[in-house]
Image (cartoon, rainbow, N blue to C red; front, side):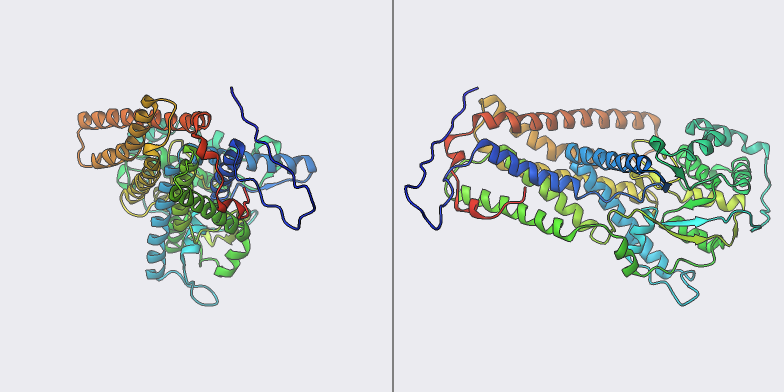
Length: 486
């Protein structure tokens, strides 16, 4: 690999000010872009409240911190590989918060001992993060309402069998697994509650498909029901409202928006520096274009990531970030099996992989209305992919190693925009035909394969083209004198 090292003449005398060189190196381009990518993909994470673990030793605290850091790193990698997925998830979360604000403020069950809860977007986001727990106190006798519904009828057996088989989990094994802290990082606060365990079994024996809103999502319903076996319930906003209407809790927790702000760990300075760094890159590209200077494909892709991050930030503007501790509310009584069935049916619906435990999963949709959460995710993802792909088209006439690679870049950029729109245009919910469903899923996986190949090519090409930049791409502009924080 050929390399070039510039020669810079030193001043022959003492000067009060020496300006920088009028060139930029390959590493200058790389580090400035990677700095922005790091800020956009790490700081953008709005993860849910983690499972509560009591760590007593230094070793346990270190393992707990490392475990939580690995979770955030995993979502950072997902953001790098598919930023449009994060935008879609943010859109679904926003729709959930919007719907719950409307339902909560219309409900007659928002009273507190001191007055009325003014439910805001921040409250909805916080509840959907798993920020509010219902505690069933130990060694106390809570009232259990009698459920008039018949339990253990033979007509329910096929449904129970299908639900259990779809979930592939056993209730007792689930309870044992929840009591184990990951990476031996301490003791988990969650414990199996004998009364709730019995009620969950009764709920399984009495449930019918008519009890579920989405009666084909047996596995998700079973997982939401299984987590209700414990002494701690972590419910999203929709489930929390239902628990209040049922009387499982007497009132909603008295949480002011300022109290939620105190638990928000987002760093305003880091966000401000991120904005400054992105603005610097945009100004740099505009100045280079006005002076007919070359730019790198890496810089264009970095702007695309920054644009997706900005859209995600806007949707999650009122969502707390980095919350580690939830608020607790004490249950007023135990639920009935039928109430458990309804609470589980209103619960979160994780995508890609199922619910792993009693905590609120980071990959969860939250129920609003029939399929609204999924369509919100789909629309948000498509719009994110459109923004991402359109910005790639800025490099349409850039310098590439070969003409074939330039053509492939153009095709990949167009596919990044077109494939999500085509996929969304073919609505999978318009028919109940199994044949059409199979054709749809085949088309979906084929489209996903084409999309992934296009994205992989772009990812490889942005680094390959760094070896073939035109000479004027290394010419510095006056914008280099602005401070950079990458």
